[in-house]
Length: 632
Image (cartoon, rainbow, N blue to C red; front, side):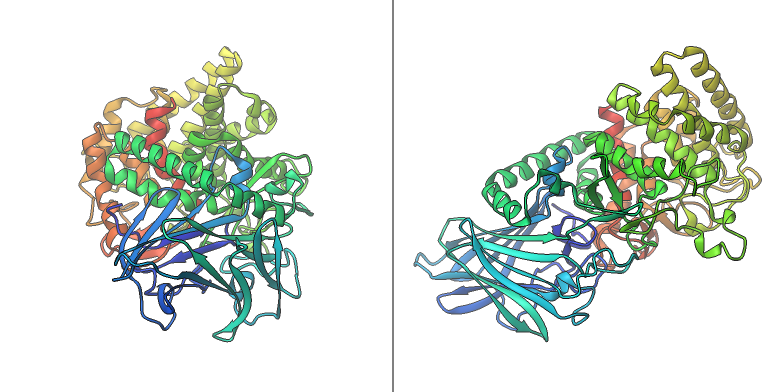
């Protein structure tokens, strides 16, 4: 990988089980949770009685890091001195088409070494994991530890004593229930130690030359989510096995899992490079793990998959529709069942007595409590709850995603289950979508905006999406009716949104303004022909004039941008060459930004600094170029 990632994923399983390095050298800083809060894992290697650090700050000499590489599912480091060369790989089974292993909360570290000086060496790995992995912050609670041997593995575990399962929700929080596990082959040992006023599990593992040794990191959260009042388990538990059995199973599959990680990563990179160039492929590499790991995979009472996103460093909302929408290209490419798992809670809440509106909700809770919409609740007492809804936004999002699921699945089975509410939402868009009133859209950080041209585009595409579903059902007359409505709105849009130079406005009432028209991408992908190709290209040509050092701003009001929308806008380019040129500044941003955090989607195009957000699933939107070239 030529890019220098702003942060490097080591353990990426779900929003709570997450460990990152935020420095170029693995030993230059201690590891952290994606929030930046300490999640300390230290790694040293003892060579002939002499100890060297390779991960985290350990107060001993370092084993010099000589290389780093990262693929979609693996992270590799090489270290070297005059005695040995050490290779360390981190990987997790985040296979989108294998929901069980995607859900299984086990992550791997693989180690091997070779002699540099030609001599035999006594080599041992030492891995110390702190209590921070099972507490919000160290010292918050006393912890219990245990060490046991099972199936040829020695395992240490640690967890809080209080065990207040699913006791709270929020954003900048870590898990403080369940148990963390570290496991190695039985020739190793695990002991409990105190480091920096913390309880730690310390593994010592002998390593033979040119043989691979594995360290497994696991977490059993006991219950995954509070889902409308029922505490539901993670999906992996549907197999009916214990965490100990899952660890054994994962250990026995380690070589196979690593090979699958390599194969999937190579395949993704090759396809992405063909579609959008090397820098595009590296952007997808950077995004892949966090797109999945910003979710929790569970099952509802009926055994159906629910795949709950967390708005990471936003407000902690769960199952947010306008977070699911930008992430959807990834899941349309890899597994629509996961996208359905994101939408099931939205439909369930939308038909409940609690939701009394004729438009789609914004969210269905605050992670990990899926108990109904929380967005806007803080304005309810002042009578402004409705002011903080996103009615056109969310109706359009839901209809577009439902059309995409039908197109990829080549049937309307999922849409048929929700036909009545889809009808309500499309009626809402017809009534209010052409020239939206003063309201929020997914870019709510920019504030309320009336007459939003891009939001109007979303309404148009939502109506067109509904016509696609109807046509697939064989209801041609109704499909034609809704398509004609969308076409009439599109023709009107071109006239009323136009600037004099061939570009299109931020709002209908303000000439000589600009914004990303990212919602237009579906007309191009679906080949619906609502807009002439000249509309795409004149808009794209005008966009190029606004590109700063690190990309095009979201609109004329600020210099910040959104990476997902920038990529969607780039897909309006008439050629691969122009697409590559348009996204190159974004690649440069992640390569040089001093904001060393997991991949942000909201940054400044002049400074490259993070404005807000990190580790969000919306980076699944970067995969839209692959969707454009491979699915439809």
